[in-house]
Image (cartoon, rainbow, N blue to C red; front, side, top):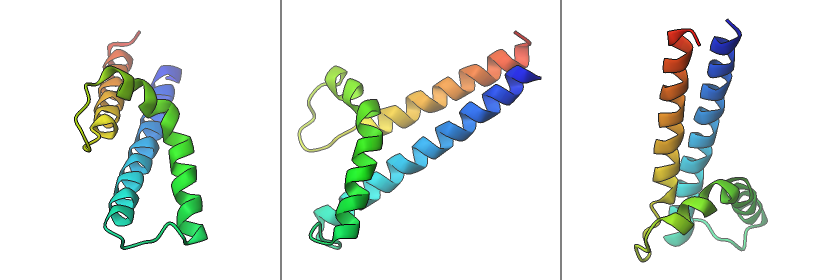
Length: 97
């Protein structure tokens, strides 16, 4: 029972991190296409906060991945890895270990 609860908590955290990655991606697109401006203090604060949260997770992935030019695939890789971890932990919890 405790393991199942722990897996649910990890699933919840995986979902939160995935949403933060998606928000950072969308905000990055809005900044790149000049829809929102970094001169706005609120936008700059949100951007800095998102980068501070995600950079420790994305930096190791960026070091391992090959350079793809201007396209950064590390957020997608992070989401896939987190979901694989979640699936693995659910399988372990279901098997009763």
